[in-house]
Length: 152
Image 1 (tube, rainbow, N blue to C red):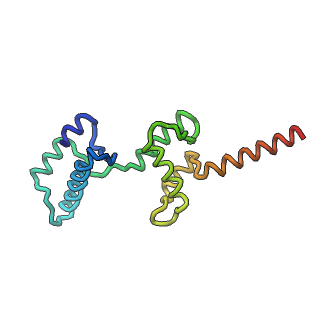
Image 2: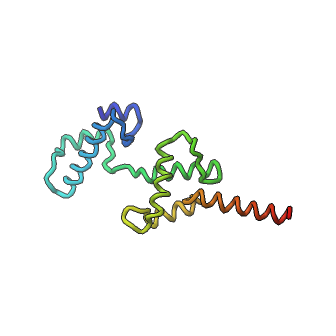
């Protein structure tokens, strides 16, 4: 099943949490956990034969950094459009959800469940807007002030 998944998708990134891949996701997570146990010389079920079989198909022992993958999408979007205002109509719902989580997590920055300083700085450096409604209001208010100055 794992070989077939990689052949079709081109990677072992299964983490879409869909029902049809839930069992495979769980198994992959278990293999990675057993590998970590084995590396620390703790009891595990990963035999050398199983480890070699996974190595032969270039299994990725490290969990994919999904935050970094989504950040790269944001970076690419910024390069293409010159801003980080991803429209709600954007067709990648996983990406949309990630953006919403960054805004939620920014409010919790400095806590265990909030954004780390490193992630916060990366998003800020890209020009990510954490409070889009406030920024829109501010921009429109400034537009109104400018209009009033010009037109009395």
